[in-house]
Every structure is written in C-alpha cells, then in structure tokens.
Image 1: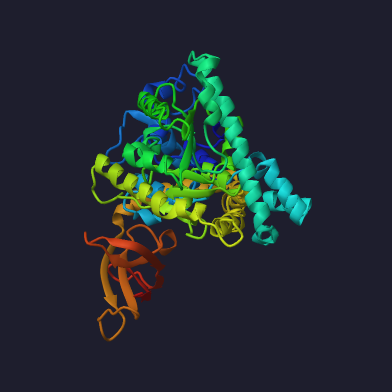
Image 2 (image 1 turned 30 degrees about the vertical axis):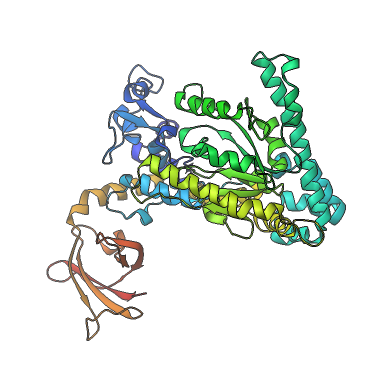
Length: 537
C-alpha cells in the first residue's frame, strides 16, 4: 500500500517488495502451515476496509493454491511467502530438497531441482544450552577466552582443543552431569506425583529412580504424531529387557507436551505415562510433564544418548540433538533434518528407515522400532559399558570428543547467522537498494511482456555439431538448437540443455543444465540458432 501511494502499480510494487524479501519455510508437515478461508483475508481489503486501494483479487491470488491438489478457496501463508520473496530457504539440506518437491507446483514446468528454494541449516545458541560445568572444564583446561570463542565465534581450530582434555576429566564431567539429572528428575517426579494426588508416604520408591552410573537416554520435544513418541513401545518386552538388563541396563527420561488441540498427541503421552507407571520399570523410565527451557537445560547435559525417531522426512531440522551434542551427548537418530546432513559414525548412530518403499505405517513403525532395539542391544550399550585398561570407556569417550570437535562448530547459531547474512540477507539488501521505482516498473513490464509472448517460444530442431551422433558416457557432445522466439528476442531468454540419468519412470534425475550461446538468427523462418557443449558425465 505504501508503494502504491508512491506511484507504483501493483505489479511494480510487488517487484520492489520481492527484491528485498527472504522467506524461510520451517516445516514440511501440512498441518504446520497456516491456511485461512479467503473471506477472512478479503475482509481486510476492498472499498470499506483498512486498505481500500488494494485489488482484493490480486491479494488473494498471492496465497491461492493453484497447483494440482491445492484448495483454491484457501489462503496459504507459505504460498504467499514464496510468491512475495525473491529468496527462500528450508532449515536443513534435506528440508530444502523436500520443500522444492513440496512447492514445485508453484513453478510449473520446472524440475524440482530448479525450484528456487535453498537451505540454511539451523543452529543453536551455545551460551544458553551448554552446562556451566562444561564451560568450566574447558576454561580450566584451555582457557576461558578460548572456550568462550569456541561457543560463540566457532571455528574448528578452537574446538580441536577438546583433544587436550584428559579422558578422566571428560568421564568425570559426564558422570557429574548425569548425577545432577538424576537429582532433578527425582525432584520433578515427586512434584508430579503429588499433583496427581499421591501422599509423601507413597513416594519412597522415587529415591531409587534412575542411577547415575547407568546409560541414560533422553527424548524431549513437542509430541505431534510424526515425532513418534511411543515408537520405543512397539515391543514392550524387548524394551523391558533393555531397561532391566543385569549387566548393561539403560534408563530413559522422556519429557514433552502435546498441543492443547492435538488429541492424538495427548493419547501418545497417556500411553507413555501408563508404561512408565509400571512398578517393574518405573525406576528406569520416567515421563516428565510441563516440558520447557528450564527442564531442557538439565536434560541435554545429563543424557548420554539423545534419541530422535521422527517419520522421515517430516523433521524440518530438529535442534534438540544439537543442544545435547554441545554437552557431549551422543545422537541416536533417524537420518532426518540436520542429522541427515552431518551424521558420521565417529560420533553417533543412524536408525535405518523404511521410508519411500511403500510400506504401510504400522509395518514401517515395526521395522524401524526393531532397528532401534538392535542398535541399542548390539552397538550402543556395549560401547558405553566396555572399559579399557584404565577402567574407562575409552571408545565412548572418543565419540564424545568427536561429537564436540566435529559437530560443535557446525551446530552454532553464529554459523547459521553468518550463512543467512552472506547467502540471503546481504544479497536481498543489495537487491532492495538497487530496486528503485523506475527499475521496479521496468522489471514488472518486462515480466508482463514475456508472459504474454511465451506461447510463441518453440524448440523446432535439435542436432549435434559432430560428425557422429553417438552419445557415450565421458564424452562431450556438441549441440545446435533452432529456436523460435516469436515476439521475444535473445536478450529475453536463456536457452539451456538439460542432462542427467534417466530413472525407471523415464524421467531425468539429478538434472544438470548448461546455457547455450546464440550464434545466429533470425533466419527466414524467424528462428534463432544456439550452440554449446554438453558433457555426458
């Protein structure tokens, strides 16, 4: 509206806004995207509304789901964001890929790889989430300034200093943090049972809940169904065997809360609570209600393993595992979100998944739960309890070091902000400064002209420039293309050659594009000639 007041029409104003706008999409879950009835939006425009000069139809078109399967009568906020932004991103490498496929209908005729949505992987604010004890150990061993720089500035050279900390100190720190978590859990569990109506005399068993020398697994987050809070319960006997193993037991701390309107999430919480209340295992598995930051700041440092088992690829990024990693907690996760991007077997475990194979949901949960149990039984618990010659779990401690050294610099908010500024915000700011009113008008007029004349663009003939037409892998093929541009000229278009392997459905996968150069035209038929090399890799 302000730009219209300055004399720009709707199209030119739109170009001015787009130049400086960055849109970040935060979820691949449809339920997480706001969609409203068109009339709720329309009432704010029109002759009697707050912005009477705006064209209601044009405004509504920005959020209209015009792609196959969309609901034209709904106003989609994410769709509007993508149409208003020249730059857009997901919040992990995998989420960027999922978003390109999810929103590809907004760019008809483009392959998903060409959809202009990139990614910047989330990061976390280390000073908020790193336990004071972790900071003090670093300060004592390598200096306070160097430790602070590692947590804020980042850089792998600073995190390499973790190698200077003796194994004994690392292990004593991990046990101390685990012991603090045990105390915290008992206090919170006692308060929770009192809220449920239990008397003090009934709660003596809580003094035996958790053990500071037992492998501790954390699972804490919101409880939408795709997070699969209860996947660990698929085979309860097998889980009980893990919890009650006479030599290598595990203990699990679960915290979370469901959205007030999410009945499915509430049922998952109830199912978990019923299992955790079983007198046979309640000293080994606990559920803590009212999950929030204060609780999380104790959970992340005190756990040895951070468990994450969402339905791949519905986790946009997930940051709880990052916060845990900054405290030396190892990740055990489905390859989704940030873990898909940065996982290495040196510092964690990946849970095999059955996504993309047409398995029904129940069968998929069974398969992935079985994979989780097997990892815990065969790889995780033996690694934790296995001791070296010095009586310490040397291989586990080395994984803690690798977690801090290799993941530490990557998961910082400082790295994330730097990427946003360099790749998105600074270019957007520059584009905004250069998008003067006359430039915006010129760009809007050019787009209008190209759209109006696009029907006249044709690819009439494609040939090779070599003596042979045989195409072999590893060779370079010369292409000559005859193109009709109608009322447009060479400056209005870019002619590209597209190549890639062909999948079993006959579609080009992992497409690569090469621009071709104009070498002549127009001929008597109005065609232009373009040429260029195409590498068949």
